[in-house]
Amino acid sequence: MFLNKETVTTLPAAVITGKGRNRGAGSIVHFGVGGFHRSHQAWAIQQLIGLDPALNSTWNICGVCIMPQDKIFVEKMKKQDLLYSLRICASGEKEEVMVIDAITELLFGPEETEKVISRIADANTSLVTFTITEGGYNIDEATGEFDLKHVDIQHDLQSGNLPKTVFGYLAAGLKQRYVNGGAPLTLLSCDNIQGNGDVLKLALYSFVRAYHPALIEYLDKQVAFPNSMVDRITPVTQPADRASLLEKYGYEDECLVVCEPFFQWVIEKHTAPGFPPLEQAGVDLVSDVRAYESMKLRILNGGHSLTGLIGKAMGYNYIHDAITDKNISTLFDLYNEKEVHLSLEALPGVDYKVYANQVKHRFGNAMINDSTDRIISGSTAKIPKFVLPVINWQIANGIRPVTGALIVAAWWFYLDTQVINGGMINDPAAEEWSSLFKTHADNTLAAFLDRQDVFGDLSLSEPFRDQVADFAVSIRKHDMLYACAQAIKSLV
Image (tube, rainbow, N blue to C red; front, side):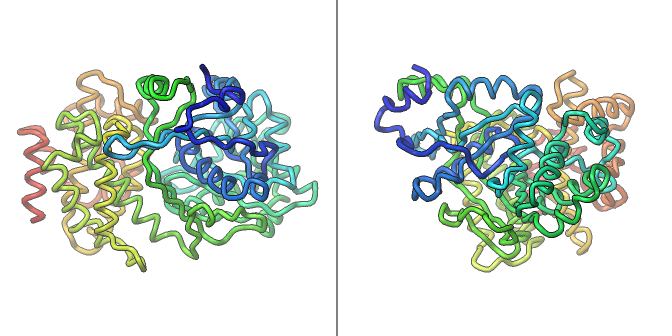
């Protein structure tokens, strides 16, 4: 039995469903309907609707997928009448399964371009959200500016072309919206980027200036770009997860999402009129989100990089196994206590030690079955945002970096090993790294650290380079366990 609008009424009582809800057109458009969106924002909207279906059903979501490879997913979702299961797994074999029906429309941009543009332009749409990954904002890491020369951006700037990028769709929709009267709108990034609203605003303004400058006045007066912080561990769903759902609950779901129970969404209050009352669903609305962003990016995401890279080098395939290793667990605690927490601003009502312990407990959730490979993937975008800010703070304050330098050394070791063994580097910059390491095979570490587009001024910092080199030598001469023990010894 496959999940759809008919079979959903026959599911076991243990499966939570939203029976009897109005699934009409909604007032939220979302770009990037991946697993994280479905476990996080769509789940939060589902909670909001469930509190008062009659009052809140207008907050349904129109999902938009624009990448060519998204077509298969869109077809699967439509076959299931846009229903999917969310399996929330806690430690100790406890779980909760619910059917999410908050997505009431799903558009495949390359084939439904005008519909996407119309949804953005519709005055009833008051919120557009994004999970398009760090790379989706098209920011040049070296300059911090929007890359107007990118081939797809140039395509979208040519009059008459159907858009390929999120900015092409967005600008076309905003232009039509402006012509229709210019209703207020909130554009809300939900990606793991510090100052994600500011980054979205920078990117969109840069595109619009080249696309239709008259829109700038509308953006200035009527469009809000709040920053936000999102958190919920959501690994890639595996075939075994779908098989388990069928065995336990008697139905098949090709769009199943698995996640942890923990949920956090912090949004700045700087929103346009018509913003949904998300605080009713457990979302925190604050005046300034920056301290929350730093906390999450440095403790959780940086901790993930630590656990994934060091764990992989020590032979662990899963995060929950790696974090229970005595040495990794100890290093995780010391990294936070002795290094990360010092770099963070005080946050009223938040104990960073408590938060870090909670994060470590979440990492140990075997039900999530998150892989070290997934955490390592895309490290070129992750390390500069999650780990290097702590090191930069240490260098600026005359403090020798320890664990952060070990994480960087572990990243170098991963890349070097993959190139030597002919393995796949799971990273958008894989070809660049492979070429660099092959060209400089006699000293890959120096070539690695010389990349100022990745490491910034740290490439010129002798204390940083020396510490990374010390750990790299230890890893090569001995192993990662030895290097890990070295780091622990220097911190206690």
